[in-house]
Length: 283
Ligand SMILES: C[S@@+](CC[C@H](N)C(=O)[O-])C[C@H]1O[C@@H](n2cnc3c(N)ncnc32)[C@H](O)[C@@H]1O
Image (cartoon, rainbow, N blue to C red; front, side):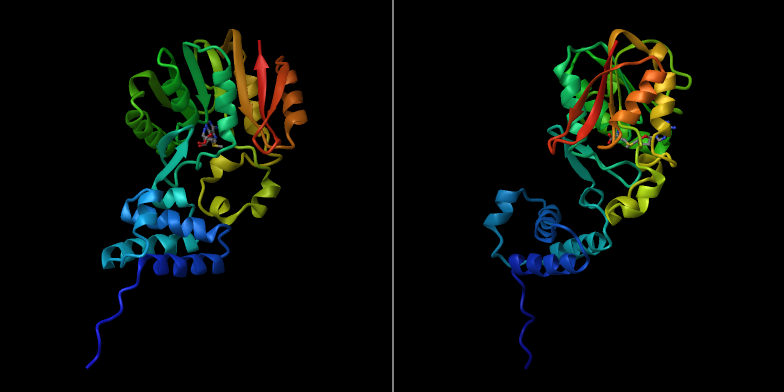
């Protein structure tokens, strides 16, 4: 007589998955296996630790294995779980938007270091992580988020609702500054800035799973910044501030682009790794 199949304990299931992810070239396989298991069983980190030696159930193994298969195909964890934490809040993430990056929090921190404004413009809003974080921090502010991607704006709209700021966020389909009017005390943008020649060197999570229009405008990577610089003059209110995210080696080139548009760089701000990340213009 054959015995009943052995039920694996959760820690074993996670360890096997971590080995599979390591074999697929995932950079932090143990961390990701744990994150995906937490998601599969809907537990936070501490709660999962307390039940790691319990037997895994068949439904949770099925959900986890599907997630691990996606991760082994190098889908980002945020696209599998559908969520990314940014500036202390949870944002919905889909393949239609850039996965909000920790370095973009540098731009949010710089914005919040200045005085609150009544009107914010976010060019290339994507998931809405920058604009909606600012609106959540500044209850008196209203904002406009522009994106060329209607699918991205649908994600931003759902994030605006879940963060309780939808009544103060106007999300519009558009091509950078074209058709915008009025003036804004703060303009923010994290434009696509990867040079065409650098795309092949990006991690598969980025290159294969994130929208190309969110990553690169082609060429030297600066065309989006050129278009923004050329278009924002009339949109920036007197005494206003502009914050643009840049690639770590783009500060000098972006300074020249802004100067050609009559805008002087006040500061180049580093991210937490000390790399140039955000250009500030104060007029
Ligand atoms: C680097 S992502 C930034 C997304 C989000 N703001 C963030 O920081 O995570 C750039 C965004 O610009 C948008 N975009 C690309 N070309 C555009 C254009 N011509 N006009 C407006 N938005 C554009 C992309 O769809 C994408 O959402």
